[in-house]
Image 1: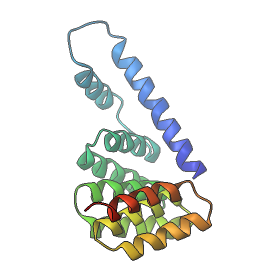
Image 2: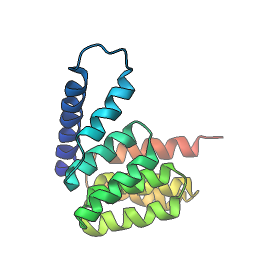
Image 3: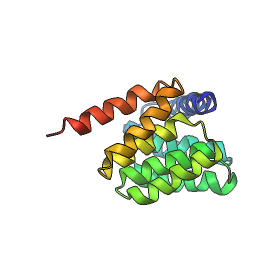
Image 4: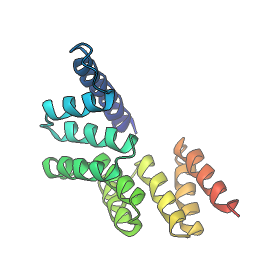
Length: 164
């Protein structure tokens, strides 16, 4: 969890630098979204972390297909990148391909067995498949590990149980 937190902080820091460099050109009448896109292409990602950060930003903006592309590029540069596999699973799940997303979560957990974010997302994927028992199993693993992600998955389970 500590490494993924560092990646998130680095991603936010990188996004702030890109935004700052994109907004320093003065007032040209272009929208912030156009400026941000231009800045991202001007600073082409080079490392797995760069691609991860770009994919994370895309996922946060609900641009899941873009996230899939970026996380795949991160993995191509660093085959054992558990965090990228996890987020690839997240984006794939959000695009509706839950079985494929689960294979990415499996890979993330094989690479990093005590990966709470992957366990939480795995549980959410089980809920999408209607498998409450398997989601609860993921919750129990998180709870026993003392992870804050246990509470987040429990909230998702409660929503699932009370959806009718």
